[in-house]
Length: 340
Image (cartoon, rainbow, N blue to C red; front, side, top):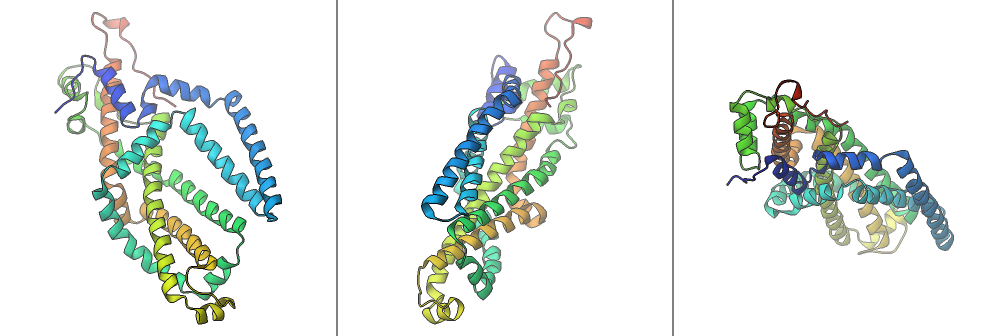
C-alpha cells in the first residue's frame, strides 16, 4: 500500500535515509561537503599515515620481513579512508542498506552464484593445476602475498568506480511522466507524483537528471553491492580450491613441482588458494561490467532500485520548487540547484 504522510517532502527525506540515499537530503550533502574540506581531511590523513608507518615498521621489525611494512601501510590507510567515509561522510547508511539489499534475500544470491560460479571455477581450475602458478604463489612471503591481494582489490575497486557511473547514468535516461508514476508507486510521493503530473507547474520529469553527490550516492550503492557479491564468490573459490587441492595434490606431485614432501592442507596450498581467489575476484569484477550475461545477473534487480530512487528524487525536487501557498509571480522560489 502507498505510504502516506501529511508532508510528502519530509516523508521523501525519511525514505531516502531508510534506503541508503543519504546524499539525496540537502542537509546531509552540506555536512558532507564541509567534511571534505582540506582543513578537516588533512589532519586525519596525517594521523592515519603516521600511525600506518609506525605500525608497518614495527611489524616488519618483529617479523623480520620488510614486505610487511608497505602491506601494513596500505591496509591501514585504506581502513582509515573507509572509517572516515562511514563516520564523517555519512556513508554508513549507504553501506548498511546495500548490505541489507545483498543479504536480505538468499534467493537473490543463489541464482547468481549457481550461474556465475561454475564458469569461474572452470577457468580457475586450469590455473590451479599449473606448475608455474604453484611455484610463484607458494614462494611469496606473507607480506608479498598480501600486497598482491591488495593490488587486485585496488584494481577492482578502481575499475568499478570508472565503469559503474555508466550504469548509474542509464537509470535517469528517458524518464517521462508515465515512468515516474510507475516507479513512485508504493513510495511516500506516489500521490504527490500523480498530482504534479496532472496539474500545471514544475514538471517532475525535468528533475530526473542525477548529478554531484547524489550521483556519487548511487555509484556507492552499486560498488558496495557488487563488492560483496564478488567477495562471496571469491570466498567460494577459496574454499573449493582448499578442498580440491587437498584431494589431488599428493606428495609425489608436490615433490615434482616444489621439491617438498608434503600433501594435504599445507601452507603452500593456502597461499595458492588465496592468490587464485583474489585473482578470480578481479576477473569477476571486470566480467560483471563488461559481459552482458554477467551484467544482467548482477545488476538486473539493482537497476530497478536505482530507477525508483531517481523517480522519488525528481518528485521531491519538484515539490521543493513548487510555489508555497499564497506565493505567486516574483515570489516563486527557484528550483534547488543540483548538488555538485
